[in-house]
Length: 59
Image (cartoon, rainbow, N blue to C red; front, side, top):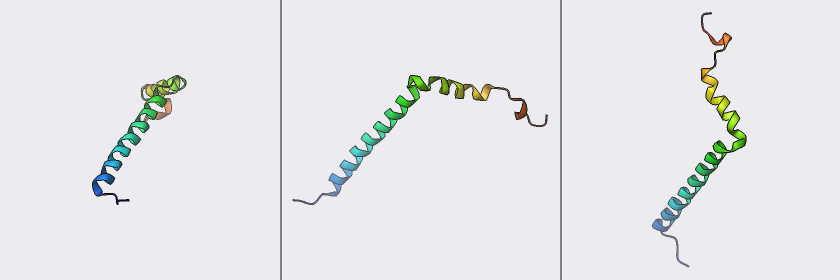
């Protein structure tokens, strides 16, 4: 058996890292677009627009 060269290790790390980040990205997109989470994300998106009585400074 021959030893791994730097180029072989670097290529493996680059390809493995790319696959890893694509899988993580797709899992995040799937979580964000999952129908069960729709109402929670809609509520969080409108949170900055709500007026709360106790949030006003100097009232």
